Image (cartoon, rainbow, N blue to C red; front, side, top):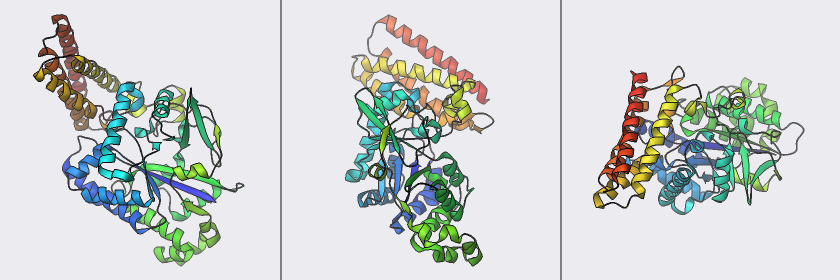
Amino acid sequence: MIYWAPFLHFYQPPTQFHAILKRICKESYRPLLKIFAEHPQAKVTVNIAGVLTEAWNDHGGEDIIQTIADLGKSGRLEFVESAKYHAILPLIPEEEVRRQIELNHKTNEYFYKKAYRPCGFFPPEMCYSNELGKVLSELGYEWVILSGAACTASWPLDVIYKVSFSKNKLTTFFRDDILSNKISFQNIDIPGFMAELVGLAQGKEDIYVITAMDAETFGHHIQHWEELFLGELYETLEGGAAEYASITHDADVAKRHKDILDSEVLEKIKVVTISELLDKFPIKVSTQPSSSSWSTSKDEIGRGDFYPLWNDLANPIHKLQWDHIDICFELVNTAINLKGNKESQHSADVSRSLLDRAIHSCQFWWANKGRMWDINMINMGLILQEEVLLNAYKAISSSGCEEKLRKNSYRLLVSARDIAYKIRDYLY
C-alpha cells in the first residue's frame, strides 16, 4: 500500500492588506476547501496560523472558518499546532517560542472549538533546531514535520523516526522536498505524480510519502491548480483510468499511462492524515535532524547557514533587522517587569501585544535583494517594531523607575533608531 499524506500551510502576515486577503480567499481558500468538502477521499493535514484565523473572522471569512471546523469534525482534516504570528522559532528566545505557540492554540481553539486537537507541530517555514525540538517535546507534541533536507538518517519510506530529549521523545516526519516542489511549481501532472509514488514503492510492501506546501499554491500562486491538480487527482483515485480519460478528454493520454492509472495501481494508493501513519509503520530512534528550513539546501546546511531567507549570514539587512528586534525584546521585558503606575502598565501591555506581531517572518523573507525584495513589507515590519519601542519606552519613562534604568533604556532606544535609519538607507 502507498500512503500519501498531503500537508497544507495556511498563513497571511499581520500586515496583510484587506484587498489582498479578499483576493486570496476568492482565488484559493474557498475553492480549495470546496475540493476537500466534495471528495470523501480528500484527507489532509493542515496548519492554520492563528493570525489568519483572526483575519478571516475580521474580514468576512467566517464561512471559511466554519468549513474548516466541519472538515475537522469529520476526521478528514487534521490540525497541527504552530506559532500564531509565524515567527522563525529557532531565532527567538525560548520564552517567546512558548508564547507564540500558546497564543496560536488559544486562538484556534476558540474559533475551531472541539475540532482543534493538534498532536503534531509545524514550525513556520519548517525552520527547526534541536533546541526547538526539545521545547516541543516538553510541551507534549507527539510529532513535528520537517523538510527532507533535515533528515540525517536513511530516507524513511517504511519506517518513522523519533529523537530523544532527556526524558521526552519527539517523532519526526519529513516531507518529500522534490515531489512537493514539483507540485508547488506546476512541474508535474497526475500520471507523473502517480508514477513518482509507484516508483518510490518499488521493492517495498508498504510506504508513505508526505508532500507539504503553502495552501496558497492552489488557486493564488497557480490559478485553478486546486481543480486541475487536486480535484482531478481525487477524482482519478475514486474513478480510475476511465475517470481520468473523461477528465482529460484525451483517451490517448489515458492509454499511454495505463500502467500507472489501472485499477490495481490506484487501489494501492490511499490518502491519509499524517497522524494516521503512526499506526501503520514501525517507529525507531534516529539521529537528531539538522537545523534547516524547507528552503535550505544541503550546501547551506553544510556551511551553517540554516535559515538563509530569514537570517542569511551574508545579508547585512537581516543582521540589522535582528539587532533591532533584540532591542525590542530587551525593552519590552524591562517594561513588563516594572511595577509601575496604571499608565505605565497600559503602555507595557501594548508593547507586549505589538511585539507578538512584530516578529513575523515576512519582513525578513522580503529582505533578500536579488531574490525576494519588497521595501514596503520590510518597512511595515520595521514600523511595527518601532511601535513596540515607542510603547515600551513610554512604559519605562512613566513608571517612576530609577534614573539609571531610564537612561540605559533611552540609550537602547537611540541605538534602535540608528539601526532603523541604516535599514531604510538600504531601502532607499
